[in-house]
Length: 343
Image 1 (cartoon, rainbow, N blue to C red):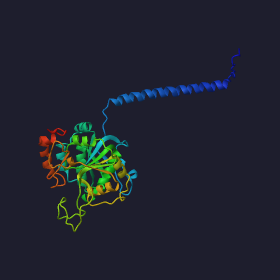
Image 2: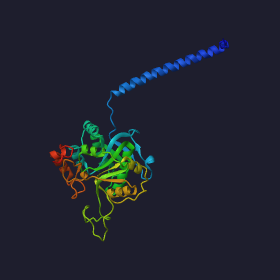
Image 3: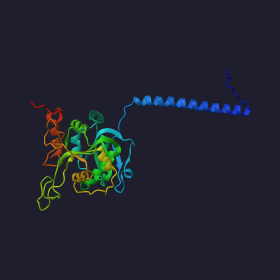
Image 4: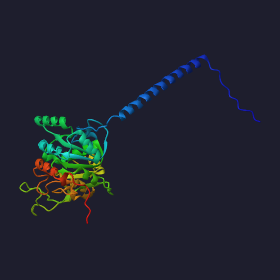
């Protein structure tokens, strides 16, 4: 039989033994440190799991007109994008204190717990969206409202009606920075909304990843201050223009907003009307238009999602009063979301 292999070992010197002893001590210290650190980490995770996790409430977003999304938007509270099915930005202004009050008394909860329950039930997140003002008294009043309700998304742009297209672009950039959402919804503060039905609409399976969802219309090319917003102009001034969604409410899918978020602000033409501006961009981006008439109902029905006084007003006429009246109607606030079966 072949002999077994032999192993030869060099006899260690006293200096190598000393070095080995030191190394063993160091390894032991490192091992003990790692063990203690692991125990602390596990205990912290256990403690954290017992705490309720809450999303940031009011946040400020810096938006620089001269820069792109990556360089111009920052998040004051966190760098994490919160996953939701839909983010609803309620566009509001400094003169809309009464409108926000009416909203908080109807479909929009005025306390954090109520808003949290609504978000958990629908998968939607909600914020009032507003810019800034050079009027210090207006800013002071806004700070008081924020301290009381804490439900705003603050944009670092001037709040001006004539600059609504810029505000809208800033809103979508900020919303994309804060939320990882399937849809981003632009909603005016004078619209009565059924959040549960909006949630069902956004949750539908769609074959198009780039979707522009709204109540579609066509309208005149030019505007005349003597005419109401919904009246057609004379053929001398122009004919109907491209299909686009009514401005009080519409939604853009994540892929669409991702493209908008990297746009330079002078990349696309800005029109005087915000809804026309977005509509033109959607045509340029060749997105899918989804026409949903339940987003522009003039009264509550078993399927209405958004109710406003179309075509008399670009929202609810006398919204502070009408919002409360609608909420008292069972058909508006308590009716089932399913479409009744036909006999």
